[in-house]
Image (cartoon, rainbow, N blue to C red):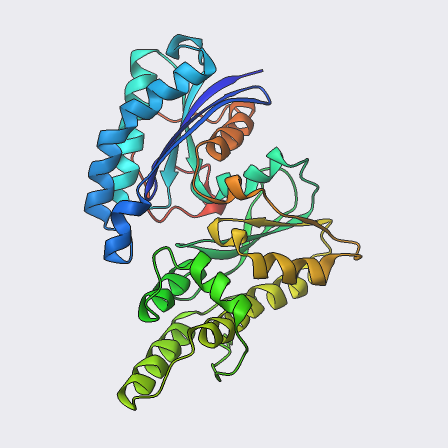
Length: 337
């Protein structure tokens, strides 16, 4: 069984993990949330600099926790994309340096594949399956006919759902990241505000969140100008109902059309309690098994990168040391670099 050291630095978490076969020996994460909170979102330049400061400490901590050495590894894996270009570069350069220094093969991993395969820490994936990938930078429906076979059947035409949550939270005066505070306020509110349900005409599985985001911002600003009180709980509830309904309704349609055995949640927004409740309501008791990742798997981490790398290692998919990052890398092109 392969011993893999994996690095993740696509956004605002510096992460290193060591996977020995099926045993996760270390999973180290240095988060930057507290730094970016005052800006209401991730500042790419600051994030890149913090990755530079954190990466060596994370590597050493992972070795200490695993009681292993770089020499013990069979391969070095790293997130190549998608993500913030400067952040990706930090992780890739660290991985390439280790691969060169210790003469280990380099495995490039797609970030979203990592989120999907994080579910293997819960149990075995059963194909064909549908992946609902929802995060700050991505909103996609991915059909998998078999292992490591990805087909994007739907994606956002504009904003990702996580980005939409953050922008709405900001206009409501809630802290960053916006997912948790909106979810909490929504539990206390009622659906009293009329917000548009986006319609995407070309592909029934595509998403759109820019219109919903703009509608909330305009409504909040209009109410402020009129001097009317804004009920944050009700606004959060009204927004979340519409935002989550898009995901759930399209997932139900796709699961039926593609006759899948499993439907898998993946990405940061999969931690949302309302999304989990709605998905359970739709799929509990059906022929489709719903797989929901543990909360620790929903945030960016290197354990998920190591899990994908273990599959790529068996497939002998390795990259040359002149590999570059790709911030717009598509999951169905994960073999192309």
